Image 1: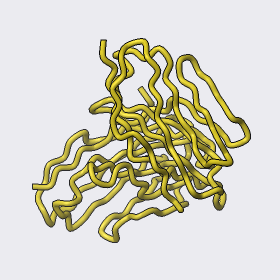
Image 2: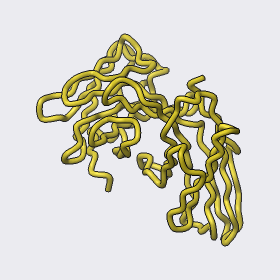
Image 3: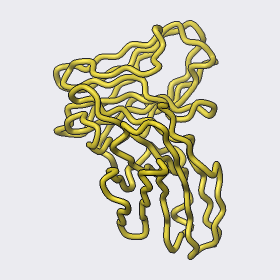
Image 4: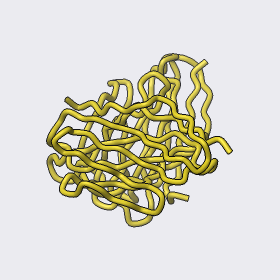
Length: 114
Length: 115
């Protein structure tokens, strides 16, 4: 058990809809990362937060947004969903967010767009 | 320059054998190279990591070999066991502005260890 909790585990919705994925980091970790895993693109970095502030952005679509709350949990919001957004979405956390700090992953949310 | 190339895509090894997975990178600014193991239905789990100032790091049956001049690093799994059957990802990250540590992942290697 990594200590990172993601909810829900599975999400099935339709095109055009909006969903929110939630992540609770390990106790003591200040940084949260979101990654997308798909068969064709592999594991892709989306966005990172550190202590409530955005720190780095990857190839995150404009339809996607995220935030980290004062209690350090994070939410990833996906809107105007398309079939191609079907993927596994992972959250990871680390103590400080620096480059050599281990990132611990949750078990992901599987998003299926019908 | 941000890519990490991983090979092979899949690997079948007999129990007790050595599994070897290779990764190559272009960006010499990368300074942290972790390996992750992922089982179906689970998130990636950190196995072992290395910095470029060392050429080898061993933890149990898992060893990372690092060749800075060739910009390559590899994972060796000694005495491979059926329980090691999983997907393995190499990754890299580079120092940036404070508190940024995004990982760039290789495409993954599916390892099957036959009993």
